[in-house]
Every structure is written in C-alpha cells, then in structure tokens.
Amino acid sequence: AQTVTQSQPEMSVQEAETVTLSCTYDTSESDYYLFWYKQPPSRQMILVIRQEAYKQQNATENRFSVNFQKAAKSFSLKISDSQLGDAAMYFCAYHQQTSGSRLTFGEGTQLTVNP
Amino acid sequence: DAGVTQSPTHLIKTRGQQVTLRCSPKSGHDTVSWYQQALGQGPQFIFQYYEEEERQRGNFPDRFSGHQFPNYSSELNVNALLLGDSALYLCASSWGDYTEAFFGQGTRLTVV
Image 1 (tube, one colour):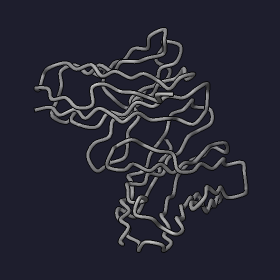
Image 2 (image 1 turned 90 degrees about the vertical axis):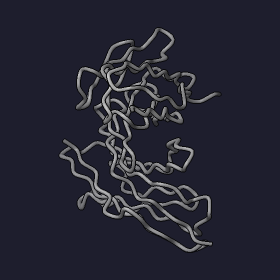
Image 3 (image 1 turned 180 degrees about the vertical axis):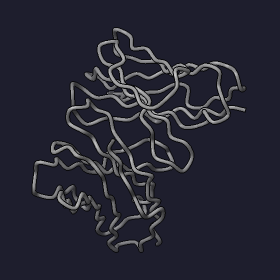
Image 4 (image 1 turned 60 degrees about the vertical axis):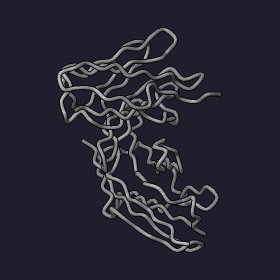
C-alpha cells in the first residue's frame, strides 16, 4: 500500500520569506500524481499544486513550486514571499493513476506565518 | 458554479444512533469520494462512488455505507455510531478515472 509521510508537524516563517515543506512517499508504481493541498481554518481542502510523475520538470504555480525527486520518492513544497494568508495546514497527497481519484494523504504540516 | 456542497455543516449525535451526510458534486463531475478526517490528522479514504456503484473502499467497517443517485449526488450513512466516529467528513468530486478532486467544506460530526 502507498504511504505518504510528512515529517514536520509544524513550521513557521516570517512574512515575505521562503519556506519549504517536506514530503516523502512510498510506492511501487511508476504512474502516479502528487499533490499539495491547503486546509485553512474554514476546513475546505484547496489544491495548491500538482505534479505528474512522468514529468521531469518541477511544477510551479505563482509563489508555489515543488522539488520532485522521483528516485528518492521526495516531493517538497516551496512557498516564496510568504503571505499571512498562506497560514494553514498543508497536506501532501498521492494519487495512483489506475485507482480512480482515490487520494492517500500525509499527516499534514501546520504552517504559521509571522508578521 | 456552486462547487462541491455538503450538508449539514455540523451535527451532534448520540452513541448508537445513525447518521446520514449528503454531498452534491461540482457540476459536470460524476465521481464522489468520501474521507474521514480525525482531529489533527490527514483525511482517510472511506469509499468512492461512480455510476451509482461503490467502486473502491478503504479500511472502514460495514457500519459505513453509501449511495450515489442518478444526479451524481451522494450520501454517507454511518450506523451504530461510536465516539471514535467523531470527525470531519469530507466529500470530493471528480470526473472520469482521473481529474483533479474538488472538496466540499466538510461536515463536522460529534458523537457524544
């Protein structure tokens, strides 16, 4: 079974600084997708960024980028120019391409942004 | 587009009771998945419905059951509630075998 591990329960960053959240996963599959979701206190899970395993190029969405190391099964999220609105719980998630839309989540990292 | 909507947003039930949670998928989506998120933890997959059939199931007991209607909306039923069933229940919808999953705001269930 696939597993997703987030080793940082909590992280903090100063406003306008950069922070990196770590994620590792375990799978024997070659085709899959990885995601970072943000869950603010409103509880709704919001997709931040996604990465297709077959793509070597790291995904980027505005201030958010990933460092995808397929051989190492590592998928970190970098947030640049952090804003107060980035404060939330961040979840790393794995999706196996052949399994429908089932997601396997990590335990989450609580990000605090200090003014 | 209303996105994924869930009802109710909160509810409190007593041990042993039964509960039904509801989910309306995003327009154009035909697949609905349910997740249980205990406090301070990541969501855990319960099951997924597609074409009114349960397509996948996670490691949850038979007390958890569901249904999908012809309009793709879905219900999650939990029988014989336990204190440990207290959690945030998230519904996610998508289209086809894979697309981005969109989540609702969740239903906070408290069992007392």
